[in-house]
Image (cartoon, rainbow, N blue to C red):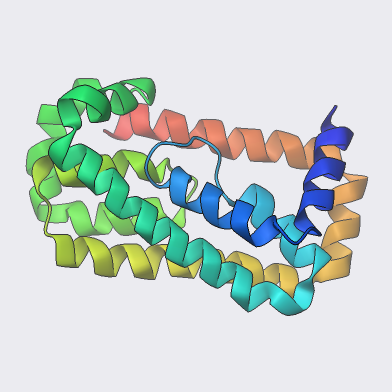
Length: 193
């Protein structure tokens, strides 16, 4: 099954619709979708290494735009949508306790969340719900998401074919590591927030 999913992702990465799919996943991941765009970004850069900068740009721009949707959900739709998303990620129970810390250190939290497998949508929704400064939110989101996606894309560009071979030979291990990082992000939400 993992091999079929990998082959499907690689085939999607080579299609003309791949950039649209990448932008859509990047946008949705910043506000509600649980799967990070790296799952498409990496095979797309492997498939078309010369487009690494374009793909990283698509990820960054779409992700920051999606972050505004997450912020809006937190600011305007918290009771109807935002609370349910935070509950899904196990972050709703510590909302009040975390609020005071966030007023002082939220920019650093957003930057850390933007760079790591931490579910970024938790921070975008939370930022909107507490009315975090929108200019700071925007700047930190651009820096964090840009660093993340450009670093991943540049590394895959630089080490392209060996990375593809490494992934294909160790597909099970790669899938396990991806799941571990994804679950680790959810666990971090539960214990840090």
